[in-house]
Length: 268
Ligand code: CIR
Image 1 (cartoon, rainbow, N blue to C red):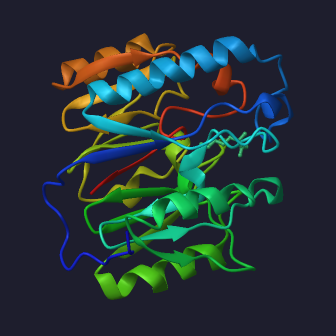
Image 2 (cartoon, rainbow, N blue to C red):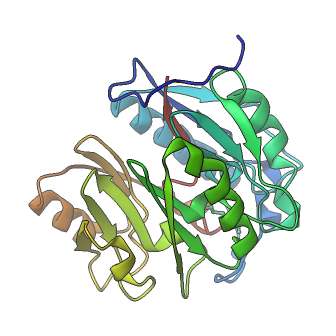
C-alpha cells in the first residue's frame, strides 16, 4: 500500500495497531545507563512479552509483531525507533549508536501506514523521550535525545500544527521513565525525575513515593497497563477512575525497559 498523508487527525481511528518485536537472544548485552547488569532469564522474558502482547489485545490493539532481530540486543524496545503522529512517522536516530540499526525494519513496517521523515546526524532522538497530548509534544532532553534532535522534530512537525516543549530529565533514561500520558488531560509522573511545570495546563497524578520508577504506564482510553511491581501506584490510578491491568515485565526491566518501550501504538 502506498504511504498516505491524512488530511486531518483521526479522532476515532478504525483500528489501533501495536507494533512489537520479540525479545532478542542478545538482550543480555543491552545498553545500560542507570542499572547494574543482572542475568536475564530469556525464556521468562519471552513468556512475559507474550503476556504483554495479550494485554495489548485486551486494550483493543491489533498486535503486529516484527521479526526478531537477534543481533540487536535492544530491538524489543521498538518505541525508541519512531515518533508517530496522525499525519506521519518520524524515524528517530537513537542516542545509543548500537541501537541505530533497529530503525531500518521499523521504518519498513511503518511505510505502509504513514509517510516517513527521518532525524539526521548530528541529531539524536529516542521515541521514549516523546510524550504526546493531542498536538502538544513534550520532549525530554536526556542522555539519548539532544537539542539538535529536539529541534529537528519541532521543525518537521510544526507545519502540521504540533508544538514541542522541552524539559531535561534527571536520574532516569527517558522522559517516559518519569511521566506517561493517561488521557487527554492527565499525566502520571514522578516530580523528582522531571520538572512537572512543563505539563502546565494538564492535571497530574504522582506515582507512589515508594515506587519511584512506576511512571511508565500504557493508557488507552480509561484502561492502563501498569507494572506488576507497582501496587501502590496502581491503587492511585484506580482511585482516579482508571481500569488498571498489572503486567509483569520484570526481565526486560533489567534491560532498563518498561511498558511503553515494547510497542508503538497508532491508529489507522
Ligand atoms: C537502552 O538503554 O536503550 C535500552 N536498554 C532500554 C530502552 C528502553 N526504552 C524506553 O524506555 N523507551
